[in-house]
Amino acid sequence: MSELLTLAEVGGPLAAVAGGAAYARVKAPAVYWSAVGLPVTAARFAATYSSTMESCGLTVEPSRLRVLLLRATTRREIRPVPPRICRVRPTSTGLRVRLRLAPGQEPLDVQASAERLRHAWGVHAVHVAVVKPGVVELRMTGFDVLREVRMPRRLPAGDLLVPVALRDDGTAFVRDYRAIPHSLNLGATLSGKSVYMRNLIAGLARRPVALVGIDCKRGVEQAPFAPRLSGLATDPEQASALLDALVGEMDDRYELIRSHQGIPDSVREEEITSDIWGLPAKLRPVPVVLLVDEVAELFLVATRKEEERRDHMVTQLIRLAQIGRAAGIYLEVCGQRFGSELGKGATMLRAQLTGRVVHRVNDKPTAEMGLSDISPEATFAATQIAPETPGVAVAGDSSGGWSLIRTPLLTLAEAARICRDSAHLTPELPALAAFRPAVSAVPEAADVPSLVKPRPVTG
Image 1 (cartoon, one colour):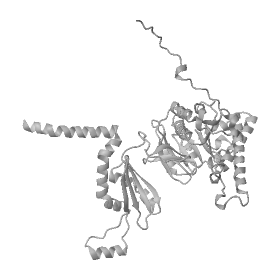
Image 2 (cartoon, one colour):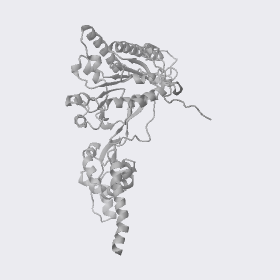
Image 3 (cartoon, rainbow, N blue to C red):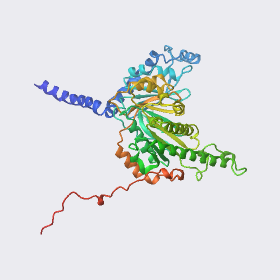
């Protein structure tokens, strides 16, 4: 009897702890990682680092000086040398290890072994990032961070830096307009493409930029953001006029830059600039972000007159994409497909859109439209996105780098509220005044009639 009581006293708490850990692993993976996964992984990494690197072929023969010193001071066996560990930093989602590569190694060697390192250390994924020449960082994640998106607490700040989504390595995917001025966003219906744009608009609404929209679906996607828009076109005819106004605004900005360059002896050499960011703050015009929803609507034509208008709009879009960056005009083009079948100028415009975000697509050619010139692996990854994971996408750029991302859920009502609260930041652009959407006043709570009938107070 006493043995049963002892077993119950010892086994009961152990069973409770094991059950709680199993529950946390499924329902609260971040808590499980911090309490259990991180200590176990850190111990496994410290104990097996040298042998794992050697088995993965990530070691080199020691230098002659090292061999001489070992032979002179110790009797240990001379073994190959792995990359030197510079720093180990735990995070809420994984473990960061910074390595200095051994002579003769390159980052691609470590990237090729990422899957074997993942299995060796028992983590969810291992990503390799280049920090500087000769130094790489292993970003291990202890669980699937894209299953439930939680943005990092520390996010980069800047007027044209907008954190939009979470990468699969636990870092934030940031839309940097100074580095990648134009971007293409592709995805099928219900793939999360609109949620991505809402997060982007909500982030831009809080910054000192001008937002201009083209939504040829009669404005159903972008009209809720009207309080924060400096211009909005809801049909192809309005879009053509709006693009003409933007091209005129771009020409005026180039005239401003040229006049600042051309005043002899009044501008110091270090102040000479070829874009608006080199202008003094008092002269610098506000950046403009053009948001095009469903770009195919601009290409579809039924008559000869519409075809002429289409060619004109495409020409203006290509002009903005080619030379708009220096004038502070940036493009975000959104669509379900974007290939040569749309018509003349489509592929030329697509080539100017450096950033690529591809959500779930209906066919492989659509993924190839956005990612084939970036990486074959990125194209394959885009075709593997499941329908039950809306918001998951492949993000890449012309440098060849790509990653899986997922945007946090943001409802249309929440995005509209953010734009309404940020309406005071909407800049006045005279060139776009004719396209400024009318905003109806939101009724105050006191103006809403009550549905509760008053009851008289009896004494």
